[in-house]
Length: 453
Ligand code: ADP
Image 1 (cartoon, rainbow, N blue to C red):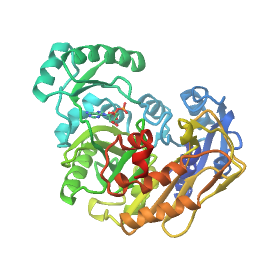
Image 2 (image 1 turned 90 degrees about the vertical axis):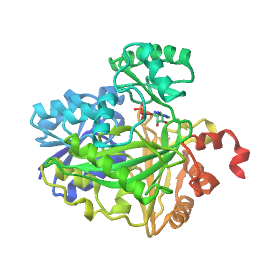
Image 3 (image 1 turned 180 degrees about the horizontal axis):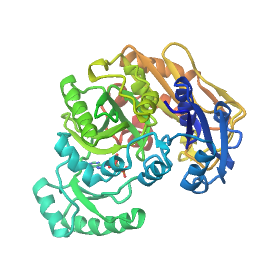
């Protein structure tokens, strides 16, 4: 096991990693920016090191400073958390060159699955369901028109190096397609330095269902079942739950096994999530693979009892997975609400500033992962998520009731949060009946009348 882990992240995920590391007997070193000086999570680390100014580009994204902090502190491993450098293959490579274990996949596996075209190719070989479309990068727009003719409009043009929704264009006819390829290529070239684009079928209304996987360095990989993350706004997930409701066990198991096969074939070690869209007939199509621990990992921890963060530290240290697929059993239902410091009544405007009141709920089946406490000042520089409220129940109905109760107990002030919106979503018919698609929250926000009915 590692002696000392450097955590190249902040906030709730830094705290989550500190806790896991401590249980494994590892010391922790946290890097922090000037904007995060005095952050409550830093008190829990054995040591903390300032690496620069508030903007992430001057601190949490500075590979050179993070590596020199790790070397100075004698850390033998780095955990990147999520966001920041977590999916940066170059960072993983620099860690390896410096003899520091990157807690995550090898740079090769990350690059292979991070490129959407090579990922799709691997998925096809592993039997993971994918969207029909072009097999390779589109060189000539006429090729794309041919593909669209065979699969039917609408189609979507996507960038191989895509991320954050950039380099994507929906096309409903030939002209839009030709124009979409040119503009997506340009955008991708500017954003990622890689203009490769491809075309696939566009699904109008679908649910977001993803499969949590974890692999080790000995060729083993298991899945930890699925989660539904259909409740989103502008592609930002608001509520996640697991297992995904309304998916037949047979289909679920087939898709989950195909996801772990993909991870295994990629010689992947660490936590990974294979994301899918699912249509009304429970057809699955892979979107992408996230090569890191995800915000919503606690949902899976509660329904499987597997500590994903500890397990990923163990496999990075070369240990075998402590579980086989047969050991993974589903128990009950879990729901997570992401609590963001944003004002839902004013266009989700971020709410940096002093948190005076922060009264978190508790009780049977309630978990809160947060770095915030009364007196904490939210800096304006980063993501506005200030905590995650996760509940577990025997079944979905109990989990919903428990979540409603926990939200009522959760008091934050004077800053505004998304908690009132969560309360509203948990009451809404589409959510209760899990009769929804990825646009349902936006529709509800646009038409308050339907929301109330
Ligand atoms: P990024 O890496 O940029 O986030 P994704 O492949 O994850 O790109 O896609 C982002 C979002 O775009 C998805 O969550 C989904 O809402 C939408 N999307 C992507 N591909 C399709 C598709 N083939 N059909 C319908 N929606 C899609």
